[in-house]
Image (tube, one colour):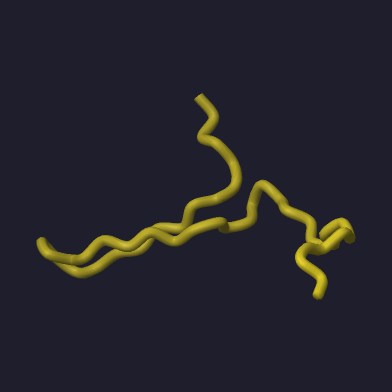
Length: 43
């Protein structure tokens, strides 16, 4: 039984890719969602 992969992943990750979607519960209004990207905000 193979326990782990030894091959390198073939998927590329870009700064514009979404890594998470966060949602509010909507207790004070309509529920909302926001996409989080792989980049950090530039300050």
